[in-house]
Image (cartoon, rainbow, N blue to C red; front, side):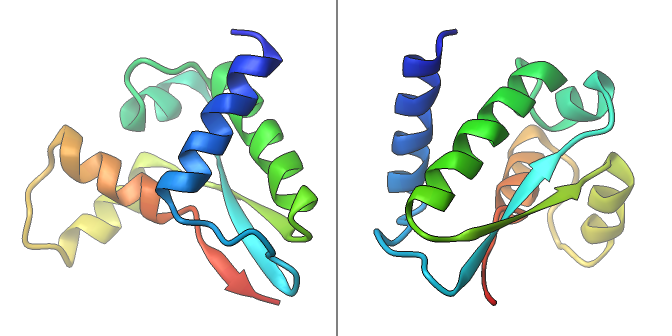
Length: 108
C-alpha cells in the first residue's frame, strides 16, 4: 500500500468517525500494538507494521486539524478486562467494537 492509499483510507476512516474539521484543543488517542499477534487479535488481516503506517498517517491527519495525539498500547488483556463488564461474548464484531472505541477524541 502506498502513502496515497493510506491517506485516502485515513480520510475515509475519519469521515466514518465524524471527526470534526477543527480539532484544536483536543487530543486524538491512537492505538498501538506491541507485536503482530496482538494486532491480529483485533485486526486479523493487518500486521503490526501496517498498523504503524496507519497510525502515522492518522497522527499526521490529526495534527493537520490542530489536534494533539497520544499513543496507547492496547493488548488482548485490556479487551478481556473490558469484556467482563459487557453482556456480549467474545466475537470478531465485539473485538472490532472494542478496538475502534479506543480511538478517542479527548479535551486537552
